[in-house]
Image (cartoon, rainbow, N blue to C red):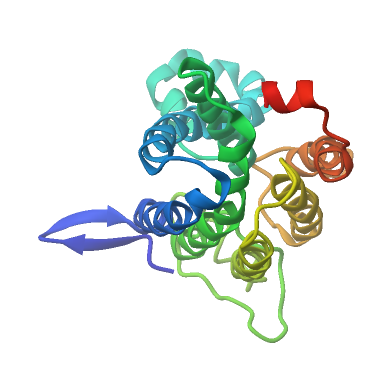
Length: 263
């Protein structure tokens, strides 16, 4: 576990650093593939700026939503220490919130400049799991999104962390690295698949189909419940179930000329 590194004496969070590096690498890969779908590199860069804003807002907002039940239960604490509680409930990120927010950012850019959305989606979709793989390594180093109690091969023994004191009480399953590896495999598959131009939206559909399955499975090995669990089903599993039909529709839909004009 390495939550921070020091650069010129200043602490730099490893999660943020890995996210920045992952985004930069992903953008470079996407720029090299932009021409396949007729997307101008300049537009992709500007759309990425909109996407970053959407990712930050969406991931923070979703984190807050998962905290609402706990916030209601501890309302007296909020009244007594409002600023400290606000810092906690907006202190983390939720991937699905970032995914939805980032998608809205790209859609807003495309609508603003009268561009088709689907070519951008097909360029960006293969590198989403690449960016996510870097992010999960950041989670592992930072000690967040940790796994269930586990005492088998590759079990992780975290040092004490005052922010999550329960983390080091038992050895844990390295679920962050598991998901990072699965995301890398998904990236390689989508990268190879999208070397030739495919049906509009199909690459994004395959990503959604594959990742919702990955996330549903990896959630079983998560040991933290901050993102919410309802009747044994986590918030992320609920979102996965809701996104699965969209992925199937994008893969198998029969596009019409009117749809192509809009998308």
